[in-house]
Image (cartoon, one colour):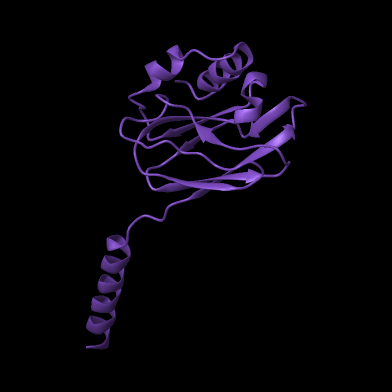
Length: 149
């Protein structure tokens, strides 16, 4: 009898754990004047992979930076995202696809970040074809290649 009760309780507990939603992750991206590789004006890491429901936290380590999504370089239907200068920005990425963020004051210096949500971003061709300052384009292309997209 005790064995039957324990077996039933164990099965019930397992069923409850399986029914719980997957926990989302918080991914931190720092806004820096100088990265660990010596490059100036960077997001670090410059590219991350995330799952739908994850939270991306842009951390204002050095003053004078913001994080803003680039029009047309987020999944279709996603509203513009814009943080304030020298303040952290927290974004929950619910929709699969590629999200490109820039630091508005330092975009021309190549300060750009790529967040890929899911495994096969449907808008990656638009991201690859985007027109932007040379340094930003070089950094974005390098991050796309690192992620194997």
